[in-house]
Image 1 (cartoon, helix red, strand yellow):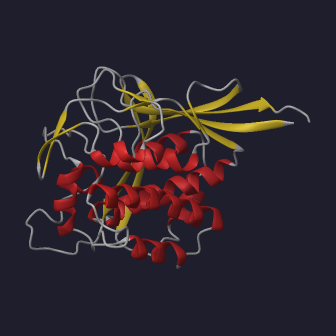
Image 2 (cartoon, rainbow, N blue to C red):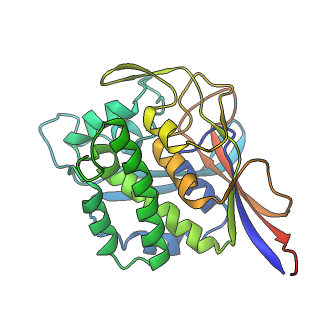
Length: 286
């Protein structure tokens, strides 16, 4: 008997949009994926899926664009996209700004409802998504919420998560769960995770990488810091693998079937991509 294994190779960290890009790059039916994504009862977003290159590696770039703004007083409120302000990936963009986790909490207040964990659970439960997607989406959100609550010294229901309530984070997390279900794998494994290094500017000053929430989420997970003086792993990316993966470490012994690359938003000396591999291994007969 054979088992299908999905392996996350996080040599350049992991974020929500990189996860969906990589999983789609495996050859998932995009129209089917978009049909499932449309079951989220929100009319505030559009998604863009396109092929691209990062340091010569071909992969898929996934981006969420907001279509509805809650606060139009900000003169820039209509211009922001997933990769500008609201994303929790804190990537450096072409204009040189580094959007950090805390900066996101401050900024995204202008652009979306402040949502707590209960609000997000309601969005998930009121949808026509499958039970697998509902269960795993809630599991991922809970992991992030728990970390945020601990950092801010509040009860899990007391914290309002601007960054988790942001539409793009909802799309990233639910979208990742949809992709995993569509892949029909038996086990999910993950490599040691590259966190990046250095410092990020945030609302409360200059913080070390990784962000406090990322560090809290990845307790018990093997991590390292290499190559980049940048933040490579985000709370959303960390929570996805923490929730879904049964093992962390070296690549399992399996026969490679296919691989995919999700493109990050950073330009670095090493490719800012997330690699995912699907393979088969023979399970022992008992």
